[in-house]
Length: 399
Image 1 (cartoon, one colour):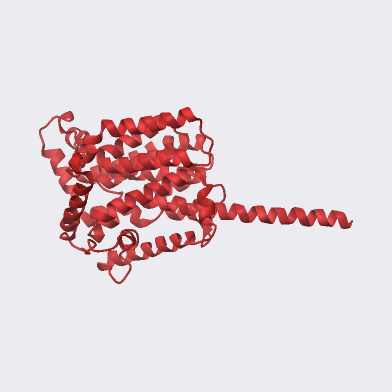
Image 2 (cartoon, rainbow, N blue to C red):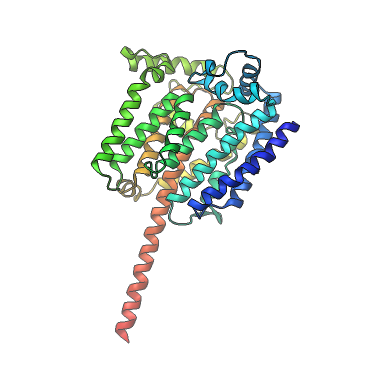
């Protein structure tokens, strides 16, 4: 544990030049808030460590495999679960990181993911939106359940970083190409199918957003995405052992078998017979108190209720008008959220695993929601300004 505490201080010091660099590019970045976020995330590293001490955790298997194996580092590279071994190996096997320190290192990856999502939100939201007198963006990056599943040695923290990097870079991809590629590669190596959703959403958003994009840039993005799919087609299908001749029937079989296997690992719900809307509701918002497994489930239910409360903000006659004229990033986020949710809801038959998996996609929904609230607030401010101008004009005429 002493090594982990030393690493905690070292990572805090490493954060400072990173934050200063981002502060220079993004003046709205609050360094003090990000430092508080770091220690908040570290708290969940400790909580997850205590949780893993008394419960089964994949983090233990990752650590044991990478410390006991005699294979060469490059020799263990694979996409999927083994990629976590590949990333952890230099630290656990070569540098001798303890289990606690390895957990903290991956928790730091998760923290960087929050940093990228914070920048993404702040860069694209024009007004300061508040809820209960707290800025909504601040509320969103401090959601405890999101931190719990991104604070340990495993897929959750690293893929969250990759998704955050990719999303942040899509604001101006030509200037953030290295961040974009790094994020895409991380996601592809951990979950190739999630890479597919990101690419599909990015292309669709890029083509349908309100921004005027030169045709050559659209063609370049389209060709790059198609090229990546063609290049990594076998790896993407191999994740589910899908035969390219029977893609749809194989996916249906895979989804059924996967859901059945997941339901055997506790806190299971039989979603196989659910209609799609109920599958999605279950994936996004359950457990909701009545089906909460234990004390942790009760807290998760409270956070899910908050998700549901935010989602109801979209139940507005102006939403489709907003969506029609929205930016490519809004449309990208909505497409990624919906496509990945549909796919994941078909294989999630376990509330615990669903709760962990949805941490990959919920921030895309949150971005759509706060973008719509931003649109509504700017519309209201514009009406108020016009009213003030009319009153001033009328007053001048009367004088």
